[in-house]
Amino acid sequence: MSDLAVIERAFAPLAPKFADVLNVPGVNLTPARLIRSVMVSCGRTPRLQACTLTSLFNAAMSAACLGLEVDGVTGQAFLIPFDIKGVPTAQLVVGYKGYNTIGARSGLTIAGEVVRDGDDFAFDEGAAWIHHAKLLGKPGRRIIAAWATARALDRPATVKVLDIDDLLAVKSRSPAARKNDSPWNDQAIGFPAMCEKTAKRRLARNMPLNVYQLAARLDEAFEEQGLPAHIHPKEGVIVDQAAEQNPQPSAADLTGRKL
Image (cartoon, rainbow, N blue to C red; front, side, top):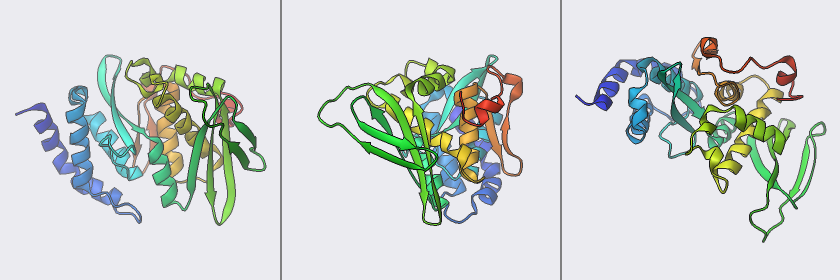
């Protein structure tokens, strides 16, 4: 029996647990589809097949809690293999489209962009407004910032802006960025997308507690602390402090004053 078949057989008894978590309004993902998306990811990334079953189960349950697919095609979420003290471990990473999807389920329109040198850009995070007029016809200009907003009809808008130094600091702490094939290292497409995603993740610090914050904290643990983490249906985000590579965020970190 192949490694992939062994993994698929091991997942089968978990279908009822996934069903309990996925049975929420606005989520159209079924247990069978979730498990199939995990198998697709494992097939496309053979290193995932060497990861511990526990980490694969935790990553899949995290995806279920967020109601996101992990096939790597929709851009909602991804399974990433990496080593923790020599142990192959699977980690769920939320894509920038995943934040859009989660926001939409909460009645929020999530938007974001990178700002390039020469763009007409002004903002006020306190008053929650952004003006961004792109300078067209001049490709290849350097990125100087990224912004994200969350808007709803029944609440004030939320705005977050990160300058390029903030974005590069996040990249420097990301285990994924150390891989040659990381989107962080694709200057044309991947790096702008990761900058936009980082700004969307930081929105959570100024938003009411909901599933959006769960996604942001899960992603932050991996991207900014280098720690494996998963979401438990009842306990929320659980970060593996035993694998700590970077310190917990300070009070200043959590208030957004600095990285």
